[in-house]
Image (tube, rainbow, N blue to C red):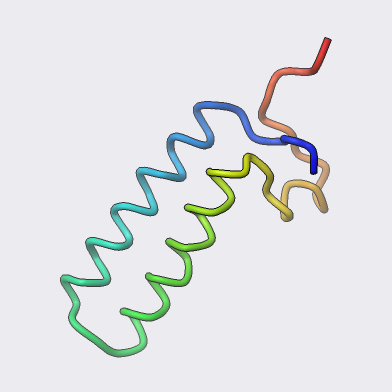
Length: 67
C-alpha cells in the first residue's frame, strides 16, 4: 500500500479524530455517538497507515513525491 498522505494531513486527521471521540462521549449515546466514533475510527486508521482510499480514487496525493 502506497502512502498518499503527508505529515500535516495525517496530523490533522489525528486531531479531528480526537475531537470526534470527545464529541461522541460528550453527547452520550444515540446515532451521533456511533456516527462520530465511526468517522473517528476511519480518520485514526487512515492517519496511522498513511493511505486514504478516497484519495486514491480521486487521484489526490498530499505527500511529497518519492525520489
